[in-house]
Image (tube, rainbow, N blue to C red; front, side, top):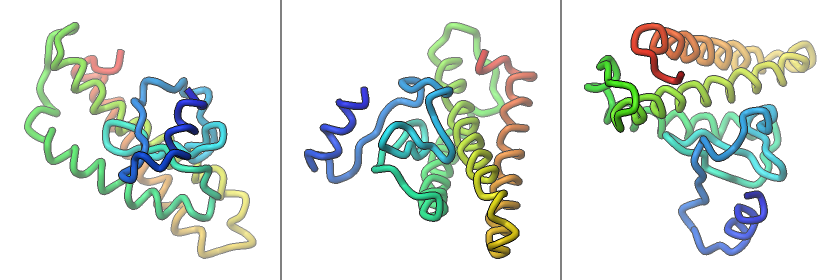
Length: 155
């Protein structure tokens, strides 16, 4: 997979970016802030946008873009988020992927917050990013837990 992604990034054949399915990468292989081999996986709606490895200080720029993409999906899904669908149906799969999108974004923000936590004493302005990342991740994770409890998605 990494050779495939690297070849496509290097080819410049995809000026709009290279994207992979969130299910195509094991969560245990994803490092702080979306690091994956020589790349950064940016939650981009229902997929990851793959970019060259970003330094920690550049991740907030990607976070903003990531949030914009997630908001676009939220608008499309707002009528369906609270519905319950039968297991095994395509609707159940689609709503599970939707909640996984929020879960992946939450993990991305949580690992970023943990990574910058050691730098707070020497760089107090990071405190706002730290708190915002923790708040965003905790809200998203809570919403995912509630979805699982109410509708059984993500199991």
